[in-house]
Length: 498
Image: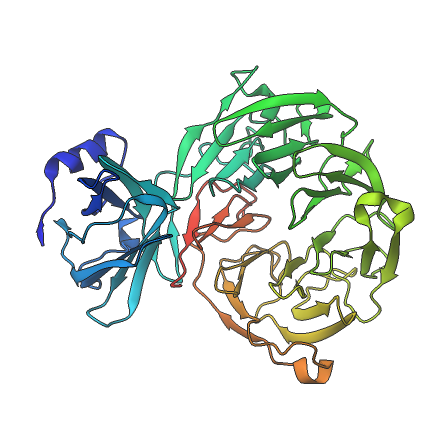
């Protein structure tokens, strides 16, 4: 181990990095002409020193791995000390290189912390990359100060190309509860907000000055639509990528609230919400390029606590109706109402403000929520669209609603926050592991087979928040309200070991 290059460390501070940036790891890289290039890796971490993911009293061994197409795996590991640097063998030039850094308790010990870059290109010269490292299977504060000012009712949408996340609009804190014309980008590699996105045609981002709007990821960006500003409902929509946003044409999309069902093949559906002060049954389709087809389908009835997802057989699964009956719309959803059929799921527990997660095998988990009488539901059911059956597979340890539920890259599902029986948001989270549920099985075989356990706590109790799975395998938790009803600006990252 050699001392850190202090000139690089000073440069980090000049670029706005906090002193919690713990180390610089210098990696040799083979340039495309055969001469060596240099890859400089900056490791950033939580802004809270108590969450130090490279605490030298715990992390005593550092393991580095780089892989990519048409190359073997380049590895290096050794004892870790704060302020040191590690050299690894040359990395072949090429695209889609990926770097993983792990902190261990010792050689061959437990993984304590982990970070992973997005794909990058190695060529001749110097390449600089920043990697966020967080505590494994625990929440760490994202680098920096979070959303400032805090806001609620914003649209939070991942960008498929870069893996970054956009925060669009929202309302400010209590006492200053006005629409915010802000579009900000969260960089998933460094786990920090990187400043406002440039707004074409409107430098003040007035087009984003809205709340209770919807946003949907597209093939090369994101669409946001509807909502309202300080003067009332809005019918305009905008298109964004990671660099800029522009205001698209006016449409009839003057919906307030509602929900999104994303299509795995691209685009998706905007459902429900309020139109002209009344709950709407309208479903609008957005194709992968952002073109809108209004009113192609209709909800069977209006609902104020709806949840929706698209299952593995292409059906639209819906829960949260006033008549307490879950439904599935199947057929050619793109062709419109005449080409689809509506099916009532007789065995499913209908839930308001629940979460639904489509698993890699196409089945759907329905998690928590509340009944029509307000009673909080803790049960977890699985719907199999191929067998057309719904089975109870387990229960949450703590029933909740308005919570988050997100797939992790290893197949587990993390449930975060939400309102519990006390009427307040919780910081408790639970880990659901559906990977070993037998397929094509009877309900008797599935009953009680789902593994559920308590997981790491959030630093801040919250409900009505966004929980976004990132391309690097981590999870971003943002927004929502705390127990006093205030908007939360703090961003939290859950880092997985795999």
